[in-house]
Image (tube, rainbow, N blue to C red; front, side, top):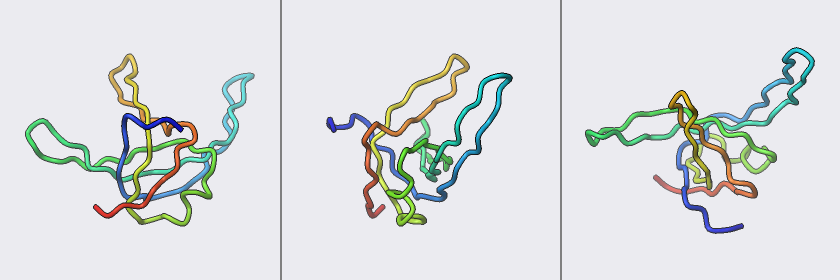
Length: 99
């Protein structure tokens, strides 16, 4: 795996599966996800806590780390509406760290 440009750090709060969804004739498969509680820096020097959801293909890597601080390689993009979306880098593996 290439060296990641961005690492997301936070407390692993939840591991869950989004159920299968139907949109008209299309069906979106169930998706495994994790939630990290992260501290987002603010322009004035303060911090904001935010839950970040990440889709994963292997929840078994995350389940033993629940309620622990982890670091994962991510990519980021902004939607047309200005919302920031994070995604787990393909092949990315969580690592424990001490805050």
